[in-house]
Amino acid sequence: MVKTSPGRPVDVNKDRDILAAGRALLFQRGPQAVTMEAVARTAGVAKPTLYRRYANRDELLAAVALNESESMAGRFSMTPGNIDDLRQALVDFGCDLTRFLLSREHIRFIHALGASTGLPRESRESIFRHGPLATRDRLAEWLGKAADAGLLRCPHPAASAEKFLGMLMGLDLVRTLYHVPMPRDVEALNAHVQTTVDDFLALHRRA
Amino acid sequence: MVKTSPGRPVDVNKDRDILAAGRALLFQRGPQAVTMEAVARTAGVAKPTLYRRYANRDELLAAVALNESESMAGRFSMTPGNIDDLRQALVDFGCDLTRFLLSREHIRFIHALGASTGLPRESRESIFRHGPLATRDRLAEWLGKAADAGLLRCPHPAASAEKFLGMLMGLDLVRTLYHVPMPRDVEALNAHVQTTVDDFLALHRRA
DNA sequence: TTATTTGTGAACGGAAGCGTATCGTATTCG
DNA sequence: CGAATACGATACGCTTCCGTTCACAAATAA
Image 1 (spheres, chains in turn cyan, orange, green, yellow):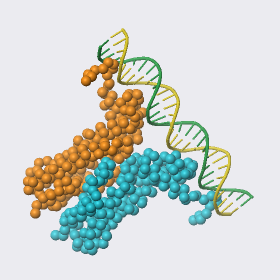
Image 2: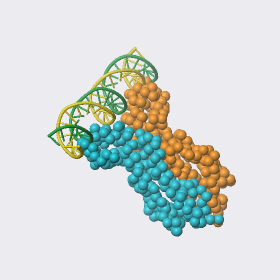
Image 3: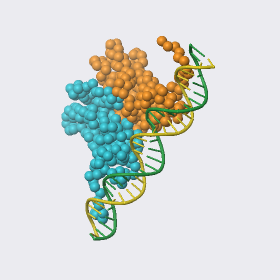
Image 4: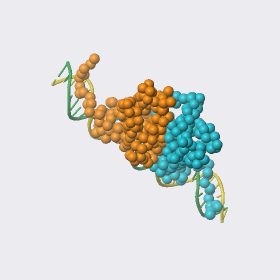
C-alpha cells in the first residue's frame, strides 16, 4: 500500500469538476455536446488533464453517464415500507415512484440515455440492473414476505411486481419519450396510485 | 395551377432514394450518422441535390423521422377484434401489440426517436397522438362498447385501457430503452398475455 | 535543494462535416 | 432550336473536434 509518491499529487477537485461539467453538458445539450474541448472549457481544465484521466472521448462519456446513473439508481431503488399496513405501504411506494418518474431530473435522464449511442452495452445493462430492475426485485421480495405472512396471495412475486409497476406507469414513460407533457396534477396522480393499489390488491387477495 | 414548367422535371425517384438512405442510416447507425455527406453517398446523389430539397441537415433528419413515423403509427394503431369472444379478442390484441413492441423495427424506432434532437415538438406530439394514444383510445372505445353490452364493468374506459397497456408492457419498454435484450421467448410471451388478460378481466367482472 | 509528478497554455496534423460555388451535362417546354 | 431547370462531380472555405506534443509553471516527497 503506497501512501505517498513523490511529485505533485492529483487534484481531486479536478475530477469532480470534470464529471460535473460532463453532467451539465449531457443534460443541458445532449450527449453529442460532451466533447473533450467543451468539457475542458466548462470545467476550467486543460485538455491534457482530461486525457490523463480518460484515454478518449468514449471513456469520458461513459464515466459521466455511469457516475450519473449511480445517483439516479440510488434514488430509483425504493422499497415499500412496513408490511403491517399493506395498502398504505404500497400507496406510499407508488407515490414516491411516480413522483420520481415524472421528475424533471428523471425525464432528462431518460432523454439523455436514449440519445447516448456511444454508451457501451455493459454500462446500459449495469444501469438497468442497479436501477429499475433492483426496484422491481425489492418490491418482489417485499411482496414475497407479505405472502409468507399470509397477507396476500402472490405465487410469482417478480411477475406481480412488474405488473404493479406497469399498471402504475401506464403510458407515462411513452409520454416522456415523446416529450408530451403529463396531463395529471398531484391530486389526480394520488388518486391514480390509490386505484392502482386497490386493483393490485384485489388481484392478490387471499383465497 | 401550374401543371408544367419549362426545364428538366424533378426526379421523384431521388426523393424516395434520399428518404430510404436516411432511414437506413438512422436505423443502422444512429441519428448522428445521418449526415448530408453520408446520405448523399448512400442515396447515390450529389450534395446539391440534397440541398435543393432540404435547407439544412435538421430539415432532412426531421423529414426522415416523420416519414418513418407515419408507417410506424399505422402499424401501432391496432384495434381489438370482435366483441363476442371478449377474452380471445383481448388476447389476440395483446399478442399483436407485444409482438410489435418487441420487434426490431419498433425497438430501433424508439432508439432513433430518443436520439433525434432536431425533431420539433409538434412532430413528436403528432406521432404520439396518432400512435400510442390512438391505440389506447381505440381500445377504450372497444371496452366502452363491451361495457354497454353488459359484458364487463368499465366506468372509466380510458383509464382501464391505459392500465391494460401498462400491465401488458411491464418494464419491457424500459428494457428497450436500456438496450437490455428481452428475456422472454414466444411461449412465455403468450402466457404472459393470457395471464394479463385474465387479471384485467378479473378486475372488470360485472357485479 | 532536487527529483518527480501534475497541471497549463498553446499549437499542430488530421479527419469530418456543413453549406456554397462552379462547370458540364441531361431533360423538357415553348 | 433556345431557354429554363435539374442533376452530377468536384472543389472550396469554414468550423469543430480529436488526440498529441511541447515547454513551462506548480506542488510535493526525499
